[in-house]
Amino acid sequence: MARIVDRDAKRQKILEAASACFAKEGYDATSMEAVASAAGISKGSLYDYFKNKEDLFFGVFEWFQQLVMVSAMARMGEHQDARARIMAFADAAIGALLDHLELYPVSLEVWAAAAKPGTRPRFSGAMKNLYASYRAELAGLIQDAQAEGAIRDGIDVEATAGMLIGAVDNLALHYWLDRSFDPQAWCRSFLGSLFDGIGTETRKA
Image (cartoon, rainbow, N blue to C red; front, side, top):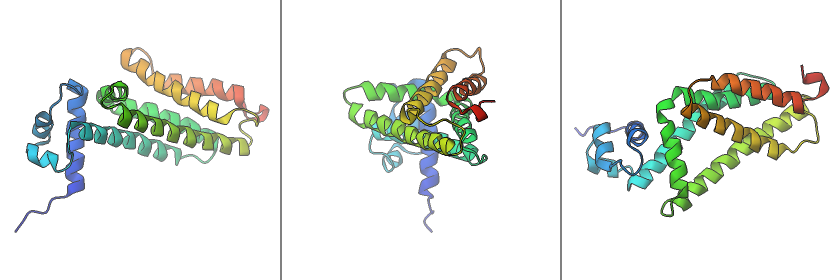
């Protein structure tokens, strides 16, 4: 009787193995053979799931971002008011870094892929869409906070959302380079100062 293969589970196993390989060796130095070996499958089987190394790396990128988003959505769901959900969204992004710190080099490799001529169109387009989705999510939360009276009207919502994402993203990079501080504490302190600036008088406390 033929063995039934759970393709989703096998794909997940491949992505986990590939992410470790890319994080350790970098995109250029990682081979499909190395990934297949790490995943415990044949090279031919690997090509059943991903047509080439670029396709595999893109799959890792999508998988890792999904991990971050699922974590963020879960933490946001624990809170009722929009201001707390904004805090939870940023906290989850930093938390995902701490939970998967060994995979952070993959993020740097994605930026490199977005800059290289051969892979630029695919990866820069994906990054553009990713940041647009983050901005839209945060902009919606900021507007919700305005409706709740926690953030004053009249601020540039999209610019505020974009700068907040940039701050969190940069904080993650700083922590990768320097482990001497607590990134979640810094993030919470920054958000507290931000809300002091853009909050309504009744909600600044």
